Image 1 (cartoon, one colour):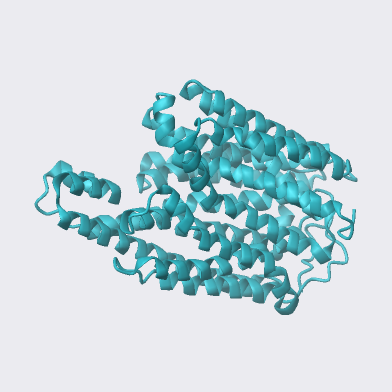
Image 2 (cartoon, rainbow, N blue to C red):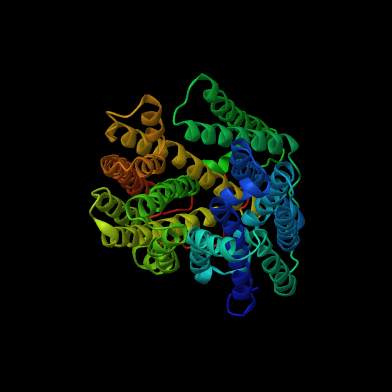
Length: 515
């Protein structure tokens, strides 16, 4: 299939809708938790698992999902993933208690874990080199569109309709998308059927799930103590064992889930790591912005979603146009410039005050979005161009796996920076010990205490303390973006690669083709 006929673009349009639905399924849940707590009689622990179940299954299932894409063929894997995601969405809407809802989230996460890497690798097969970068940019932008759309759409549905519709809206997307994919995507099984690697699948899934759980727990508590260090260490040990096992399998001539030699390719490993850094920065901005809009500027949930649009539109603009910059400046220059622009924007945001208002936020978030979108689309294309042609879905899944670690890591690290800055700057002298500790818990808790007590000084202190913590966090993000620019300039290809042919699994460990 060539990009010059219409089918690749039809395929891309369906994949964009599917990724938007999968992204919405995560973001819309955050605004529906208060409703679900009442409808499903859910405890605080259950509410946490409503979010964590989907994340953990995605972390554990992306690599096996890529294996299915390479073994079954992309059309069959995509349709199966979308079907499971649709069934999980229906089960969420029809759940009557917390246990059923968590099980439904696991089912939806499993479908997403199959669909996401397979959809990305499908772009490698249906688009030629001329249009692939633009297609990847559009696909990347679609994932970010769900960030503001979730609170806006979820808030509107919860205000006017049955809560189950926030999940049932996925069903027509799945049905229509499946019909179009079945019609336009050729049933082209891989040229070589990759043998299974049960040990690699088991170790990678377990290690990624345990590591992600450890990061989530560390982020939730704001610290890593003895108990919380155990899953982090266990996850890292499992992934280290995976590399050792796969190296031995390669040395003995057996096939592997992920060829460790692929990680030795500078273009692949650096681009994948930079993608994780991009997710780290994204979480930083999106962790603080909704809270700033609501606690400092007084917006509601839907209003904060609307105010996120400049960020997402900036990301979309940067991602969709990145391929033009790569043609002129190469991947190295384009990604480095994107991270540099993001760093400058984050530094500007790190100078926010309580009286800055929305204008400053709109300016720096647009610039941040353009820079980040440019950098992430470029690094994604570089990583995918390094993926072996014999196993595109597994390679794409590895890219996605590395990137997805950046999100919970960003929540843990950057959330701790913000919370620490907030707690240290909050003035609670004169408050009872219990009230003071409650106020230190979050800016919203402090504002609620101030409202009930009619204490304007506490409210002003809470807003000022939150802005202080947010500024510290954005300054950390700016430093990380500078590091990203340096790494991009050092390790990514200097010029657009010739791409006479993508590497195969057999030569994945050979010389890196990046100039």
